[in-house]
Image (cartoon, rainbow, N blue to C red; front, side, top):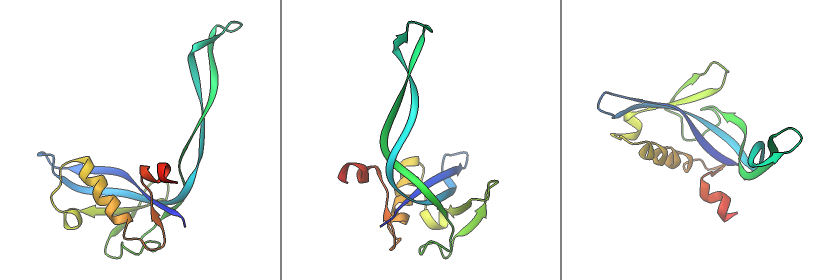
Length: 131
């Protein structure tokens, strides 16, 4: 079963810090190995006198496909916009999440939305440790 993750693009607030609008991407993907190069400042190459470049890796969420409202069963009454790259963005406002102020509350709301999808398993950090 594929995983479903929400990736907020922006959170709009009023002057008092109350969240007015949230724009988010929903991405279908799987867990995989993410690789990147990093410099090891504690290990200097004597020939170049520069830090050695080390390849690092970790398990993480790898997004495979951006989802639109047509792909998601729980977004039938949500507004959809398209960003500059052509990716679908799902819009939420206070009608959907009520009165919230913190980013943690936004992430909790979006996590509760991903749990409504019946064809994908919601992704959260616990998925990595639980297998």
